Length: 171
Image (cartoon, rainbow, N blue to C red; front, side, top):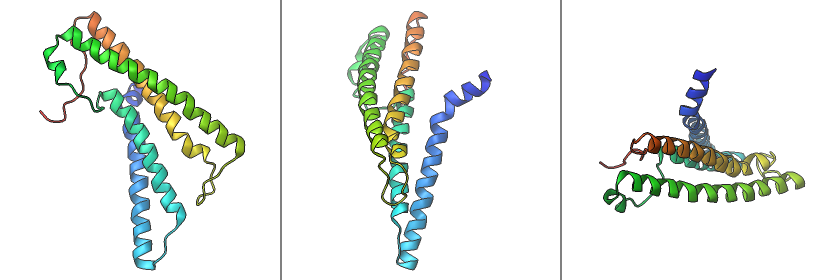
């Protein structure tokens, strides 16, 4: 079971992103073909694309938090020593963690209100809870990945290793 959890930890966001991306592209392709060939489009196709994109964004935010891939200005970090750099990264993750927890609370409130009043989407006629849940799921994943980042950074500091800085986009 431990190997499965390690595999899930390493690839969960990638698999989810792949599913939502394929769903988005296939539905968009079908809708474009329907519009161009049959001069007809559906509202449900547009909704699937929209909500797939929303899930892509929030799950992608968690994947970026895991890999330290969010946009940051790190010019000054090159002039800091390894411990000071680690503290800056930990401080940045701490600020992001507080924001994620606040956003998680308020976004979950929105889902509860939608569930209470039974709102449904216009085209799919599916409960909006499934679509609004993308935001709290995303912030919960971001929070989880930030906790993992804290543990990794504190272990690196304790063992004298440089903290994980993420992959560089342009090097």
